[in-house]
Image (cartoon, rainbow, N blue to C red; front, side, top):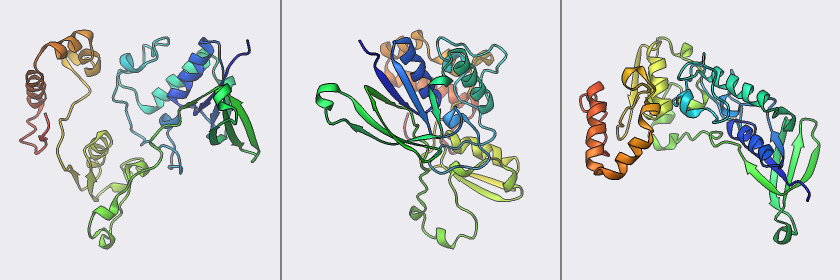
Length: 278
């Protein structure tokens, strides 16, 4: 029986895991990566590149190494609980080297189309068209396609929803373009949105800017990385026992307990953060 060929689109964290599991299952993975390196989202670049994800210089992950590492490749013991983006990229490099994954990756090769073959109903195969750095177009046929290209590549900047923005003399931009706080020293800055990036960037900028505002439509429950005894929150909260409690106890009681714990750190109502949702 011929070995089934699998196309893997992208060599970020998901792409690397897919290459590895294909090898484990006796399949033949062929990975196409449009850039010149692995890591995807987690590879910091000084300037954002169109059609690619972008992160800021100081980004630290919000899942602990114990919970986010691949099950068959523990994070090195000397790495911190919550890794800086450069350390996470280093971990992916160690993973790729350990399982000899790089030989399966075609760098600077962009997938232009993925379509069913003419005989798809009989073969279940897919036609994948790529273009490499030399401008050569190649048509491939695969038995399966795993798309691992990420979804943080096109920033959404709804400026038209803000009346008067055209008369604003300052700069309006998306966090996709943000790299560090140096450019905002002495300035007055408003960060719109209290998601992970908004909270992170507001804190960073506040150390340089004259004044920093964090704007939120609905508020939020702000959950820190650390739990009791200095342990990572996800490590202590995401357990079989916790899951069992969510099945057995009333939801209102669980919400009350969680909100009480969060408000013990800082009263969300006092800071204008308390949202309508539990």
